[in-house]
Length: 381
Image (tube, rainbow, N blue to C red):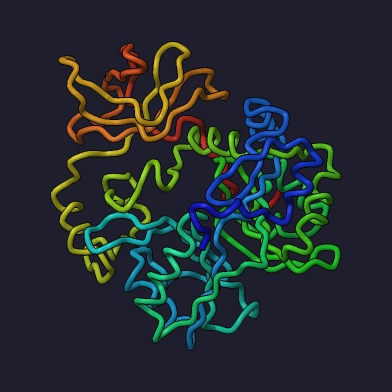
Protein backbone atom coordinates (compact mmCIF):
# COMPACT_ATOMS: atom_id res chain seq x y z
CA UNK A 1 0.00 0.00 0.00
CA UNK A 2 1.35 3.44 -1.00
CA UNK A 3 1.67 5.81 1.96
CA UNK A 4 0.38 9.38 1.46
CA UNK A 5 3.86 10.91 1.80
CA UNK A 6 5.70 8.17 -0.12
CA UNK A 7 7.27 9.05 -3.49
CA UNK A 8 5.21 7.83 -6.47
CA UNK A 9 5.97 4.39 -7.82
CA UNK A 10 7.25 3.85 -11.35
CA UNK A 11 5.82 1.35 -13.82
CA UNK A 12 8.07 -0.84 -15.95
CA UNK A 13 7.58 1.61 -18.86
CA UNK A 14 8.71 4.71 -16.95
CA UNK A 15 12.04 5.10 -18.75
CA UNK A 16 10.38 4.59 -22.13
CA UNK A 17 7.76 7.24 -21.32
CA UNK A 18 10.47 9.75 -20.41
CA UNK A 19 12.44 8.94 -23.56
CA UNK A 20 9.29 9.57 -25.62
CA UNK A 21 8.80 12.99 -24.04
CA UNK A 22 5.96 12.03 -21.73
CA UNK A 23 4.89 14.69 -19.22
CA UNK A 24 4.88 12.72 -15.98
CA UNK A 25 2.45 13.28 -13.10
CA UNK A 26 1.55 11.53 -9.85
CA UNK A 27 -1.62 9.48 -10.38
CA UNK A 28 -2.93 6.97 -7.82
CA UNK A 29 0.53 6.73 -6.31
CA UNK A 30 2.30 6.13 -9.65
CA UNK A 31 4.34 8.38 -11.90
CA UNK A 32 2.49 8.18 -15.20
CA UNK A 33 2.39 10.25 -18.42
CA UNK A 34 -0.51 12.67 -18.66
CA UNK A 35 0.35 13.46 -22.28
CA UNK A 36 2.99 13.16 -24.98
CA UNK A 37 2.14 15.05 -28.18
CA UNK A 38 -0.94 16.62 -26.61
CA UNK A 39 -4.29 15.44 -25.25
CA UNK A 40 -6.40 16.36 -28.29
CA UNK A 41 -3.90 14.90 -30.76
CA UNK A 42 -3.66 11.66 -28.75
CA UNK A 43 -7.44 11.50 -28.38
CA UNK A 44 -8.06 11.84 -32.12
CA UNK A 45 -5.26 9.43 -33.01
CA UNK A 46 -6.95 6.80 -30.81
CA UNK A 47 -10.27 7.41 -32.56
CA UNK A 48 -8.71 7.00 -36.03
CA UNK A 49 -5.72 4.63 -35.70
CA UNK A 50 -4.31 3.15 -32.47
CA UNK A 51 -2.68 4.37 -29.25
CA UNK A 52 -0.79 2.54 -26.53
CA UNK A 53 -1.64 3.36 -22.91
CA UNK A 54 0.28 2.24 -19.84
CA UNK A 55 -2.27 0.98 -17.31
CA UNK A 56 0.18 -1.00 -15.20
CA UNK A 57 -0.96 0.88 -12.11
CA UNK A 58 -4.18 -1.16 -12.12
CA UNK A 59 -4.35 -4.05 -9.67
CA UNK A 60 -4.06 -7.54 -11.18
CA UNK A 61 -5.23 -10.24 -8.79
CA UNK A 62 -5.40 -14.04 -8.97
CA UNK A 63 -8.09 -15.86 -6.98
CA UNK A 64 -7.71 -19.57 -6.29
CA UNK A 65 -10.28 -22.02 -4.96
CA UNK A 66 -10.87 -25.76 -5.15
CA UNK A 67 -12.83 -25.56 -8.43
CA UNK A 68 -14.71 -23.05 -10.58
CA UNK A 69 -18.07 -23.67 -8.92
CA UNK A 70 -16.63 -23.04 -5.46
CA UNK A 71 -14.64 -19.97 -6.52
CA UNK A 72 -17.47 -18.32 -8.46
CA UNK A 73 -20.04 -19.11 -5.76
CA UNK A 74 -17.85 -17.60 -3.05
CA UNK A 75 -17.16 -14.46 -5.10
CA UNK A 76 -20.89 -14.05 -5.76
CA UNK A 77 -21.47 -13.55 -2.05
CA UNK A 78 -19.58 -10.27 -2.44
CA UNK A 79 -20.07 -9.36 -6.11
CA UNK A 80 -23.52 -8.96 -7.73
CA UNK A 81 -22.42 -10.01 -11.21
CA UNK A 82 -23.44 -13.38 -12.59
CA UNK A 83 -20.12 -15.21 -12.26
CA UNK A 84 -21.31 -18.82 -12.12
CA UNK A 85 -22.30 -18.63 -15.79
CA UNK A 86 -18.98 -17.23 -16.99
CA UNK A 87 -17.67 -19.33 -19.86
CA UNK A 88 -13.95 -20.17 -20.11
CA UNK A 89 -12.06 -17.25 -21.61
CA UNK A 90 -14.78 -14.71 -20.75
CA UNK A 91 -14.77 -11.54 -18.67
CA UNK A 92 -17.47 -9.74 -16.67
CA UNK A 93 -17.69 -6.17 -15.41
CA UNK A 94 -19.21 -5.86 -11.95
CA UNK A 95 -18.93 -3.91 -8.68
CA UNK A 96 -17.83 -4.51 -5.11
CA UNK A 97 -20.47 -3.15 -2.72
CA UNK A 98 -20.72 -2.33 0.96
CA UNK A 99 -23.63 -3.11 3.31
CA UNK A 100 -25.41 0.10 2.29
CA UNK A 101 -25.19 -0.74 -1.40
CA UNK A 102 -22.43 1.81 -2.02
CA UNK A 103 -19.76 1.02 -4.59
CA UNK A 104 -16.39 0.19 -3.01
CA UNK A 105 -14.88 -0.38 -6.46
CA UNK A 106 -15.72 -1.44 -9.99
CA UNK A 107 -13.75 -4.32 -11.44
CA UNK A 108 -13.50 -7.01 -14.09
CA UNK A 109 -13.62 -10.72 -13.26
CA UNK A 110 -12.17 -13.22 -15.74
CA UNK A 111 -12.46 -16.98 -16.07
CA UNK A 112 -9.29 -18.33 -17.72
CA UNK A 113 -9.46 -20.18 -21.03
CA UNK A 114 -9.71 -23.98 -21.06
CA UNK A 115 -6.42 -25.54 -19.98
CA UNK A 116 -4.83 -22.21 -19.06
CA UNK A 117 -5.02 -22.60 -15.29
CA UNK A 118 -6.43 -24.98 -12.65
CA UNK A 119 -10.24 -25.09 -12.65
CA UNK A 120 -10.56 -23.03 -9.46
CA UNK A 121 -8.51 -20.04 -10.68
CA UNK A 122 -10.06 -16.70 -11.66
CA UNK A 123 -8.53 -13.28 -12.36
CA UNK A 124 -9.69 -9.86 -11.14
CA UNK A 125 -8.53 -6.40 -12.25
CA UNK A 126 -9.27 -3.58 -9.79
CA UNK A 127 -8.65 0.16 -9.72
CA UNK A 128 -5.18 1.36 -8.76
CA UNK A 129 -6.21 3.44 -5.76
CA UNK A 130 -8.33 0.58 -4.37
CA UNK A 131 -5.91 -2.34 -4.67
CA UNK A 132 -5.04 -2.78 -1.01
CA UNK A 133 -8.55 -1.76 0.04
CA UNK A 134 -10.20 -4.39 -2.16
CA UNK A 135 -7.72 -7.08 -1.22
CA UNK A 136 -8.45 -6.52 2.47
CA UNK A 137 -12.21 -6.84 1.84
CA UNK A 138 -11.79 -10.04 -0.17
CA UNK A 139 -9.50 -11.64 2.41
CA UNK A 140 -11.67 -10.65 5.38
CA UNK A 141 -14.80 -12.08 3.79
CA UNK A 142 -13.47 -15.05 1.83
CA UNK A 143 -9.97 -15.74 3.12
CA UNK A 144 -11.02 -19.05 4.66
CA UNK A 145 -12.37 -20.26 1.32
CA UNK A 146 -10.15 -18.72 -1.36
CA UNK A 147 -6.56 -17.53 -1.82
CA UNK A 148 -5.94 -14.01 -3.15
CA UNK A 149 -2.67 -12.85 -4.72
CA UNK A 150 -2.13 -9.25 -5.80
CA UNK A 151 0.63 -9.26 -8.40
CA UNK A 152 3.40 -6.68 -8.14
CA UNK A 153 5.47 -8.11 -11.01
CA UNK A 154 3.02 -7.59 -13.88
CA UNK A 155 2.54 -4.77 -16.35
CA UNK A 156 -0.65 -3.99 -18.26
CA UNK A 157 -0.62 -2.32 -21.68
CA UNK A 158 -3.77 -1.10 -23.47
CA UNK A 159 -3.67 -0.96 -27.27
CA UNK A 160 -6.77 0.98 -28.30
CA UNK A 161 -8.22 2.17 -31.59
CA UNK A 162 -9.87 0.97 -34.80
CA UNK A 163 -6.66 -0.55 -36.20
CA UNK A 164 -5.61 -2.18 -32.91
CA UNK A 165 -6.69 -5.59 -34.22
CA UNK A 166 -4.70 -5.20 -37.41
CA UNK A 167 -1.61 -4.15 -35.44
CA UNK A 168 -1.85 -7.06 -33.02
CA UNK A 169 -2.63 -9.55 -35.79
CA UNK A 170 0.93 -9.04 -37.06
CA UNK A 171 2.17 -10.52 -33.76
CA UNK A 172 -0.37 -13.28 -33.12
CA UNK A 173 -3.85 -14.65 -33.75
CA UNK A 174 -5.71 -13.08 -30.80
CA UNK A 175 -7.77 -10.69 -33.00
CA UNK A 176 -9.01 -13.65 -35.03
CA UNK A 177 -10.13 -15.54 -31.91
CA UNK A 178 -11.45 -12.89 -29.52
CA UNK A 179 -14.52 -10.69 -29.38
CA UNK A 180 -15.26 -7.96 -26.84
CA UNK A 181 -14.80 -9.16 -23.24
CA UNK A 182 -13.01 -12.36 -24.18
CA UNK A 183 -9.46 -13.33 -23.21
CA UNK A 184 -6.74 -15.85 -24.04
CA UNK A 185 -3.14 -16.67 -23.17
CA UNK A 186 -0.57 -16.04 -25.89
CA UNK A 187 3.14 -16.29 -26.53
CA UNK A 188 4.55 -13.46 -28.62
CA UNK A 189 8.22 -13.49 -29.59
CA UNK A 190 8.97 -15.68 -26.59
CA UNK A 191 6.94 -13.52 -24.17
CA UNK A 192 4.10 -15.13 -22.22
CA UNK A 193 1.13 -12.80 -21.91
CA UNK A 194 -2.61 -12.63 -21.37
CA UNK A 195 -4.53 -10.80 -24.10
CA UNK A 196 -8.03 -9.48 -23.45
CA UNK A 197 -10.24 -7.71 -25.97
CA UNK A 198 -11.48 -4.83 -23.87
CA UNK A 199 -10.57 -1.28 -22.90
CA UNK A 200 -11.63 2.06 -21.54
CA UNK A 201 -11.87 4.25 -24.65
CA UNK A 202 -15.05 3.04 -26.38
CA UNK A 203 -12.93 1.83 -29.30
CA UNK A 204 -11.95 -1.71 -30.20
CA UNK A 205 -8.79 -2.65 -28.37
CA UNK A 206 -6.78 -5.07 -26.29
CA UNK A 207 -5.18 -5.18 -22.87
CA UNK A 208 -1.95 -7.14 -22.64
CA UNK A 209 -0.80 -8.44 -19.26
CA UNK A 210 2.79 -9.64 -19.03
CA UNK A 211 5.81 -9.51 -16.76
CA UNK A 212 7.42 -6.19 -15.89
CA UNK A 213 10.69 -7.50 -17.30
CA UNK A 214 9.20 -7.86 -20.78
CA UNK A 215 6.86 -4.84 -20.86
CA UNK A 216 9.26 -2.42 -22.56
CA UNK A 217 10.12 -4.93 -25.28
CA UNK A 218 6.42 -5.52 -25.95
CA UNK A 219 5.72 -1.78 -26.11
CA UNK A 220 8.61 -1.20 -28.52
CA UNK A 221 7.31 -3.98 -30.77
CA UNK A 222 3.91 -2.29 -30.91
CA UNK A 223 5.47 1.13 -31.53
CA UNK A 224 7.36 -0.37 -34.46
CA UNK A 225 4.04 -0.15 -36.31
CA UNK A 226 3.77 3.44 -37.56
CA UNK A 227 0.04 3.45 -36.82
CA UNK A 228 0.68 3.22 -33.06
CA UNK A 229 1.54 6.25 -30.92
CA UNK A 230 1.82 6.71 -27.14
CA UNK A 231 -1.09 8.27 -25.25
CA UNK A 232 -1.41 9.44 -21.66
CA UNK A 233 -3.90 9.88 -18.87
CA UNK A 234 -5.40 13.03 -20.38
CA UNK A 235 -6.59 11.34 -23.57
CA UNK A 236 -7.63 8.26 -21.60
CA UNK A 237 -9.95 10.46 -19.55
CA UNK A 238 -11.49 12.38 -22.46
CA UNK A 239 -12.00 9.15 -24.42
CA UNK A 240 -13.73 7.32 -21.57
CA UNK A 241 -15.95 10.33 -20.91
CA UNK A 242 -17.07 10.46 -24.55
CA UNK A 243 -17.78 6.73 -24.22
CA UNK A 244 -19.93 7.37 -21.13
CA UNK A 245 -17.72 5.27 -18.84
CA UNK A 246 -17.44 5.89 -15.10
CA UNK A 247 -14.23 6.71 -13.23
CA UNK A 248 -14.09 5.47 -9.66
CA UNK A 249 -13.72 8.24 -7.09
CA UNK A 250 -15.42 10.70 -9.42
CA UNK A 251 -18.59 9.27 -10.98
CA UNK A 252 -19.06 6.65 -8.27
CA UNK A 253 -17.87 5.99 -4.74
CA UNK A 254 -18.84 4.15 -1.57
CA UNK A 255 -21.91 6.39 -1.07
CA UNK A 256 -23.40 5.79 -4.53
CA UNK A 257 -25.33 2.63 -5.43
CA UNK A 258 -25.10 0.98 -8.87
CA UNK A 259 -28.72 1.80 -9.75
CA UNK A 260 -28.22 5.53 -9.27
CA UNK A 261 -24.93 5.25 -11.15
CA UNK A 262 -26.74 3.69 -14.15
CA UNK A 263 -24.72 0.50 -13.71
CA UNK A 264 -27.61 -1.93 -13.35
CA UNK A 265 -25.98 -4.09 -16.04
CA UNK A 266 -23.22 -4.87 -13.52
CA UNK A 267 -25.81 -6.86 -11.53
CA UNK A 268 -26.87 -10.21 -12.96
CA UNK A 269 -30.52 -10.27 -14.08
CA UNK A 270 -31.54 -13.08 -11.74
CA UNK A 271 -29.59 -11.51 -8.90
CA UNK A 272 -31.69 -8.35 -9.17
CA UNK A 273 -34.49 -10.37 -7.58
CA UNK A 274 -32.65 -13.15 -5.73
CA UNK A 275 -29.95 -10.97 -4.11
CA UNK A 276 -27.46 -13.00 -2.09
CA UNK A 277 -24.62 -10.46 -2.19
CA UNK A 278 -23.36 -7.82 0.23
CA UNK A 279 -25.60 -4.75 0.01
CA UNK A 280 -28.42 -6.67 -1.70
CA UNK A 281 -31.29 -5.57 0.61
CA UNK A 282 -30.60 -1.91 -0.08
CA UNK A 283 -29.89 -2.36 -3.81
CA UNK A 284 -33.00 -4.47 -4.39
CA UNK A 285 -35.08 -1.85 -2.56
CA UNK A 286 -33.74 0.84 -4.90
CA UNK A 287 -34.39 -1.34 -7.95
CA UNK A 288 -38.00 -1.80 -6.78
CA UNK A 289 -38.75 1.81 -5.80
CA UNK A 290 -36.37 3.67 -8.09
CA UNK A 291 -33.38 5.85 -7.13
CA UNK A 292 -33.69 9.42 -5.91
CA UNK A 293 -30.96 10.58 -8.27
CA UNK A 294 -29.38 9.29 -11.45
CA UNK A 295 -26.11 9.71 -13.31
CA UNK A 296 -26.77 11.41 -16.64
CA UNK A 297 -24.82 12.76 -19.57
CA UNK A 298 -25.04 16.46 -20.40
CA UNK A 299 -24.13 18.24 -23.63
CA UNK A 300 -23.46 21.93 -22.98
CA UNK A 301 -23.81 24.91 -25.26
CA UNK A 302 -20.80 27.01 -26.23
CA UNK A 303 -17.21 25.90 -25.77
CA UNK A 304 -16.52 26.44 -22.07
CA UNK A 305 -15.71 23.13 -20.33
CA UNK A 306 -17.90 22.36 -17.31
CA UNK A 307 -15.56 20.58 -14.91
CA UNK A 308 -16.01 18.25 -11.97
CA UNK A 309 -17.60 19.97 -8.98
CA UNK A 310 -19.70 22.43 -10.97
CA UNK A 311 -23.20 22.81 -9.51
CA UNK A 312 -26.33 21.93 -11.47
CA UNK A 313 -29.04 24.46 -10.62
CA UNK A 314 -32.78 24.87 -11.15
CA UNK A 315 -34.57 27.92 -12.54
CA UNK A 316 -34.46 29.59 -9.13
CA UNK A 317 -30.70 29.06 -8.79
CA UNK A 318 -30.94 26.32 -6.15
CA UNK A 319 -28.45 23.47 -6.37
CA UNK A 320 -30.05 20.22 -7.57
CA UNK A 321 -26.99 18.25 -8.63
CA UNK A 322 -23.25 18.26 -9.27
CA UNK A 323 -20.95 17.46 -12.18
CA UNK A 324 -18.72 14.45 -11.50
CA UNK A 325 -16.68 14.50 -14.73
CA UNK A 326 -16.49 17.10 -17.48
CA UNK A 327 -14.33 18.07 -20.43
CA UNK A 328 -14.33 19.61 -23.88
CA UNK A 329 -14.97 16.60 -26.13
CA UNK A 330 -12.49 16.60 -29.05
CA UNK A 331 -14.68 14.28 -31.15
CA UNK A 332 -17.77 16.47 -30.73
CA UNK A 333 -16.06 19.85 -30.44
CA UNK A 334 -18.39 20.65 -27.55
CA UNK A 335 -18.37 20.51 -23.73
CA UNK A 336 -19.76 17.32 -22.19
CA UNK A 337 -20.16 16.14 -18.63
CA UNK A 338 -21.63 13.50 -16.36
CA UNK A 339 -23.61 14.54 -13.30
CA UNK A 340 -26.10 13.31 -10.72
CA UNK A 341 -29.51 14.98 -10.91
CA UNK A 342 -32.93 14.22 -9.37
CA UNK A 343 -34.42 11.12 -10.98
CA UNK A 344 -37.56 13.00 -12.04
CA UNK A 345 -35.59 15.20 -14.46
CA UNK A 346 -33.05 12.58 -15.59
CA UNK A 347 -34.61 12.30 -19.05
CA UNK A 348 -32.83 12.94 -22.37
CA UNK A 349 -33.88 16.28 -23.78
CA UNK A 350 -34.30 17.99 -20.40
CA UNK A 351 -32.66 21.41 -20.25
CA UNK A 352 -30.48 22.16 -17.20
CA UNK A 353 -28.03 24.84 -16.10
CA UNK A 354 -24.58 24.59 -14.54
CA UNK A 355 -22.62 27.25 -12.68
CA UNK A 356 -19.10 27.85 -13.99
CA UNK A 357 -17.19 30.57 -12.12
CA UNK A 358 -20.50 32.31 -11.38
CA UNK A 359 -21.75 32.08 -14.94
CA UNK A 360 -24.77 30.02 -15.95
CA UNK A 361 -24.12 27.54 -18.78
CA UNK A 362 -27.07 25.86 -20.48
CA UNK A 363 -26.99 22.15 -21.20
CA UNK A 364 -29.22 19.30 -22.34
CA UNK A 365 -29.42 15.90 -20.69
CA UNK A 366 -28.24 13.51 -23.37
CA UNK A 367 -28.30 9.76 -23.79
CA UNK A 368 -24.88 8.17 -23.33
CA UNK A 369 -22.48 7.26 -24.78
CA UNK A 370 -21.80 10.65 -26.31
CA UNK A 371 -19.75 8.95 -29.04
CA UNK A 372 -20.76 5.55 -30.41
CA UNK A 373 -18.86 2.65 -28.88
CA UNK A 374 -17.00 0.52 -31.42
CA UNK A 375 -16.42 -2.72 -29.53
CA UNK A 376 -15.67 -5.82 -31.60
CA UNK A 377 -18.76 -8.04 -31.51
CA UNK A 378 -17.19 -10.44 -34.02
CA UNK A 379 -13.62 -11.78 -34.06
CA UNK A 380 -11.29 -10.37 -36.68
CA UNK A 381 -9.40 -7.20 -37.53
